[in-house]
Structures are given as C-alpha cells and as structure tokens.
Image 1 (spheres, rainbow, N blue to C red):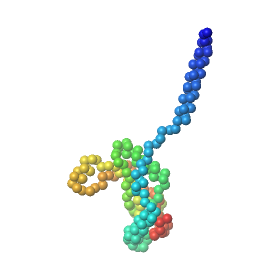
Image 2: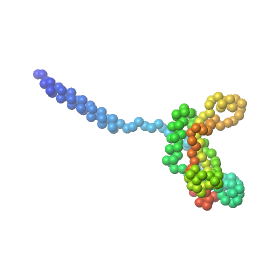
Image 3: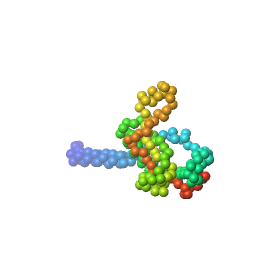
Image 4: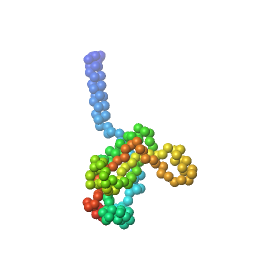
Length: 187
C-alpha cells in the first residue's frame, strides 16, 4: 500500500516542527555559561577584627598622635568610605582601559593625600573635607621587563608595578573628619 504524498509531507512538517520547538526549549533551559572563577588569593590576606584593632590602636598611638599635635590638638580623618558599587565600577573602568593598552598584572595602589585648605569643593565629596587627610586610588601595572630586570641585576629592591598615568585615579570618597568621629574608636 502506498502512503499518500500529503501524509508524507505532514509527517515531515510535524517532525521539523517538533525539532524546532524542542531546540528552542533546550536552548532556553540551558543555563548561561559560568562566569570565570574569581581568585581566592584574597583569603590569605584576611585579618580578624582583633588584628584590625591592633593596627587601628597602633596608628592612634603613633601617627595620629603626631598629626593631632601638628594640627594644634585637632585630629585628622581616620577612615575613608566607598560604596561597593563605586569600587566595582572603578575596578571595571581600570580593567577595560588596561585591556585596551594590553597592560599586565594590573592593580590599584592606595595613596595617602591631603586636601589643601583652599581645595575646590567640587573636587571633594563634601566642602568641609578641606584640610583633611584623604586617600586616592591609582591604577598600576607591571613595569616593562627590561627596567625591572636591570634593577634586580643590580641588587636593588624595587616595586615591580608602576602607576598607570593615562588611566585616571579615583578620589572624592567619604571620610571621617572630626568632630564626626572619635579618634580612639573603631566602629
């Protein structure tokens, strides 16, 4: 017995339709590829709250005491704050610009600074921060091989990373100028 042509076309059409629907469902149900793993190298650098307290107290007893004396008894700023969103966005900005420049071993150096008393208020998170210590973030990358290796050959210990001056540093974070903070407490 011969199968009618219309029935053969219907079987072919149904098979193609089934495969198409199955493929769409399978594609939609497939989880997105996993993001690259994040390094856990930071774990070896974690400290306890007690260890942080030791660092805070030592700074209070020494450096901050000298700063307070130099400021005629007025303490300087003690902490600096950025939101996670700001930090993540800045890190992404540095990564993107470093990738464009093919930079290797990219990092961020934290520098200490101080706002001059007449610093423009639009260049600080708040105008009352003028005259206070701050920190700013500077992108870094591995120095070219020839300069680092020549210094090592001469037995000079040096930092292998250099500031990347064509990627902008970041500042304008919140800080704790007195009297908003007690200089001998760490919250």
